[in-house]
Image (cartoon, rainbow, N blue to C red; front, side, top):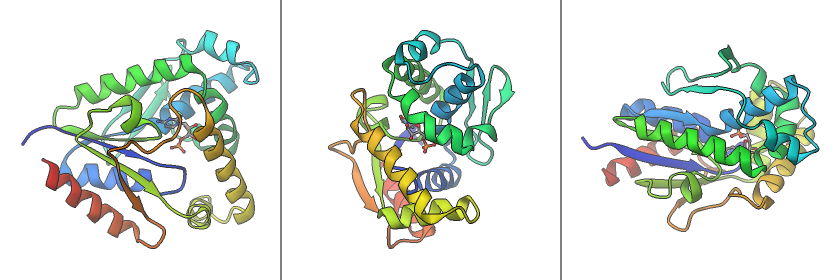
Length: 220
Ligand code: C5P
């Protein structure tokens, strides 16, 4: 069976991670969460006290942390300078600061290079999830999916994950982050022209997974 590269993009709370992990596991592919990489570099900058209101400061240190992603969909990992970062990258502080860091071109170049190396090393193929995978990181992907869902559905899913977090506040935070990610100059959140859009608002997670698996099988 030939190697296959699947790009799954979309805003926060559309089910990208759950879908991507399940599709990769079902098809024996590697898995890469690119949002985790941007969160990891953001966490490192916060812990070093870098002034995140200054893009020049962010750019100056963008090459410093070693960021390593484990690509087993059953147990994805991320370390920063050898330290497990999988817990700390999910805090509200990192969520609220990551868009400022990910908008800096030097950060994007650094992380995009890592992503391409990881995809090239995945022998059986890989599912890569993010915001700009189909448009910028892997424009030659065999299959591009763009997941969407209503703001209400996305906020409800995310506050469920956060175990009872305030729905209105979660909705506001998601909308703010998507607006920042969509409006930045360098590789914004966008649907590639050749991506297949899947609106997940009225679908169960299993329905989305089955649909994407069928699309991958039809392409390989
Ligand atoms: O997917 P997740 O919500 O964890 O992504 C966190 C943040 O990382 C996004 O809000 C965005 O700022 C950034 N990101 C990005 N490009 C990607 C993936 C994530 O800019 N390919």
